[in-house]
Image (cartoon, rainbow, N blue to C red):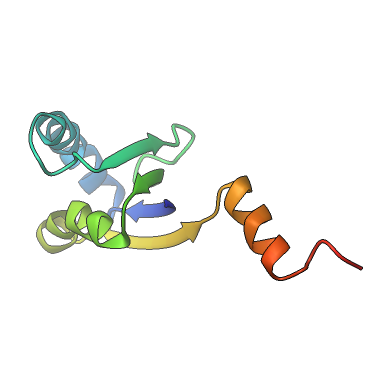
Length: 101
């Protein structure tokens, strides 16, 4: 499943201060188990203190596991939206007969 994750530090200075820690977290997570089931796509057009990610994960639980330390430790605000691939959308549209007039 694909998710859109909005990630916002409480203020810009926090983002600048903690971005290196987040980068290190991603590096270490790729080596270990914490990010094994996730594939992240980071929107580089995001503002420095408000980031946007597309994440492929087996469940939203994996995303909460990724974000929980940052919510608890740094006050990051997170919003998660479930997305559909075009194949998933077309499959659903066909089941709901949305392709018929």
